[in-house]
Amino acid sequence: MVETEKRKMERFDLELTAYLSVTDKSKQQKSVKLRTSNICAGGTFFKTNKPLTVGTDVKLDIILPLNKFKNMTRKISHIYFTGSVIRTSQQGMAICFDKNHKILPLKNGKN
Image (cartoon, rainbow, N blue to C red; front, side, top):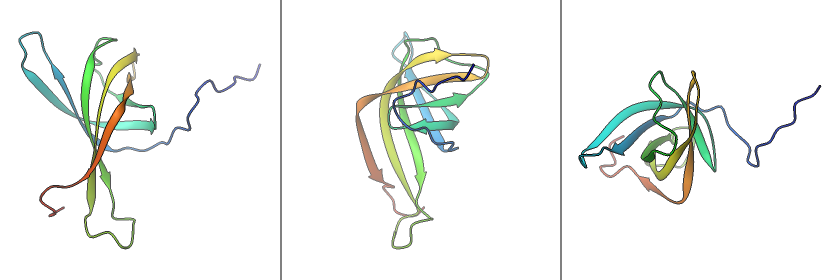
């Protein structure tokens, strides 16, 4: 039997550096550095041994390298997302992005 793809958006196998932040019960923000396994316009998957609980709200800062683009003066850009964990497995966790996001150049312009 052939398995059909259920996703509505094309996924890209990109390993991008990301900083994932959560606010714990004591209102303290904790951040961890991860790498995406794949990504699309609607979300991303992280391989991790310590996935968060489904439903956990997160903030993401994904680093997008720009060194492949010829006329770019900056070498990286940041994409800021909020979202939530929608699925976990032994391999990691899937995060669905909220509709709001920001794409910004690196602030100091050095990288």
